[in-house]
Image 1 (spheres, each protein chain N blue to C red):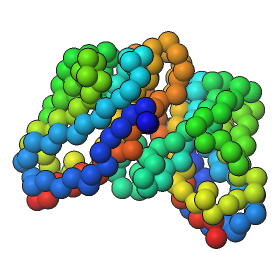
Image 2 (cartoon, rainbow over the protein chains, first blue to last red):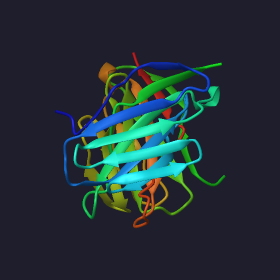
Image 3 (cartoon, rainbow over the protein chains, first blue to last red):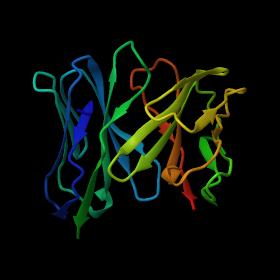
Image 4 (tube, helix red, strand yellow):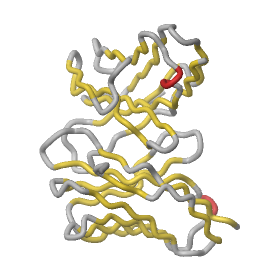
Length: 112
Length: 114
């Protein structure tokens, strides 16, 4: 079993929809949780970052971590065509290796 | 230019040839990373470096060699390219410490091995 599992999609939604992107992980030592966004033919860039459990909101984006079920979510409200990208979840242990563990990424298309 | 750059952006080579992909960052970040990204596999770590002259293997190091004589440069060499090494290669860097653990990625190199 891969340490981080992510449904690759693709996911296609109409403009204005609420989008839910999800990952599960297996290592309970993971403490840092990130979402990267990758536009076509570009490098990934950090979108959201959370430490341990809970929610974090940034504009239309909300990152949620449920450590009891080892579940990571990213919600996008009022989705826009400019949100069309691949979204990758990533995790990291605290005080351990500097190596991020990535999910495979979910490709999202928001249709105008 | 400030940031992280990769060269070449596109490369076509033949099986058995040696290829070197370059990565340069201007932030003096301690950590640098090489990933490959393939459909169905996502981003996989090839090698990483915690500082100049310190390197370590990632998930898929076979067939690759790295060096880091200067903090700002982290070249990746395919000693004898194979078709299975056709991929998009991303270099990344991050500072040591810091709450976000953010890695900054370069624009990628698309490598095709014929």
